[in-house]
Length: 122
Image (cartoon, rainbow, N blue to C red; front, side, top):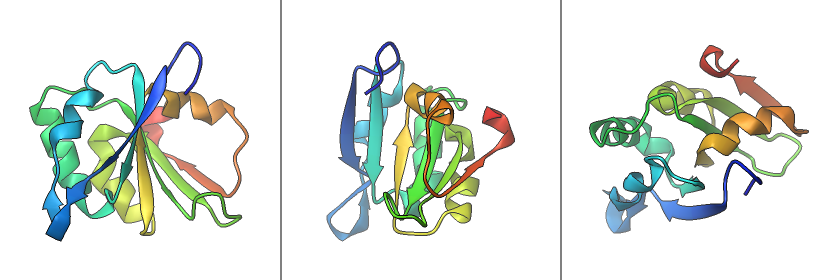
């Protein structure tokens, strides 16, 4: 959460049993006051982007793929929802996906590890 930007966080999974793509959570991205943390999203990056855009969600919504979370070798690829497939290719798996306005604000906060910010958010 981030006062004035995100009033909460939702943790969801990008897929269900047997790698079935899960889309119910994507609607929460539209004009949401929350930050979404999406587990097991790496291999579904293109499908997440496509489904989100089909639901009218802004392609410029800030997003980040983060691998090795909380380790010194942590790596974050920060861009937009529209760039998810490229971001996934730049980030190792396993990783988590974080989507929401708080991602942009995180650029002003201390960070451990490598942080790659795509031009769309610079």
